[in-house]
Length: 203
Image 1: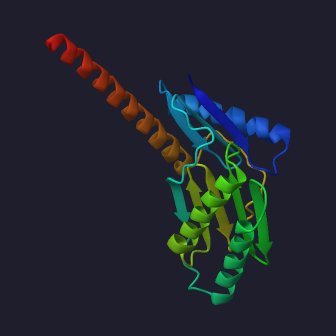
Image 2: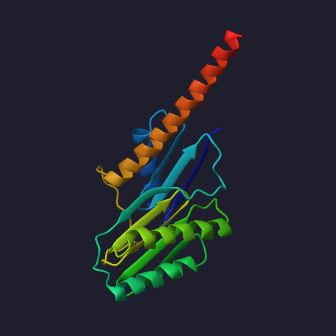
């Protein structure tokens, strides 16, 4: 049995969502061929499938992290950033946005999580984001089932995603890593199965 899910960013319209999902599926076919598991996170949507059960389960594994250059630890700006991230933590729903002056923040959980699981996942993502990105002018922390992002550089986090023939290296790397992990898991299962067969024949 194959389990799968898809999810779009909370502010996308249905046509934009459908376009993003179509793009994701075509990319997964290219980047994760002949695998029973794969995941791809784009700017506007997320697609995941696997032959092992993952629906309704938390996953706080770090799958991608990006931190911007330091702003020289501008205390006022970092204070606004922490306030925005705190607002995301205290918010409701699976998709949350906030901002203060030039600081913007966004967070989202995968829709198969309960609100308690979502809160727990975002607590981890935001905590890691603040600790590991320090005084970075922007930061992205993507965990297995949620993400949190912020920018202090004036880059608009909520822009409508655009899809071109060329894609960012981070998207390609993320999808390739997930596909390789799935292939390794299949190889381990196959080798275990063959070892059992040989053990029985040896008897």
